[in-house]
Length: 119
Image (cartoon, rainbow, N blue to C red):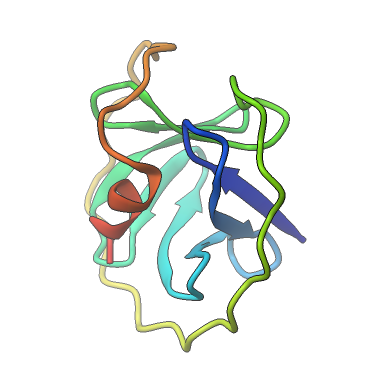
């Protein structure tokens, strides 16, 4: 199953492949991150943020991505997806940060930039 992730403007930019170890792919087909429990880890092993109640939060506790159900704005239709590229080997995970009190504020970074930091 795939869960589409939308940015703060309602455009589809990434998706979670739940039957592939919760891997997060960009729309271009690149695997950039994965979800372990509620934590989002980059392919480079760094803790990027949290995925809680279908909202992605960055390390500053701000919203950076949403599912269609949780998006605060109307979502655009999803464009066709590109084929997936082969995944690189995952690096060892860094220890995750403690889960903070999360905010409803919007992050200044885009969803794509946020996910690319884990590439």
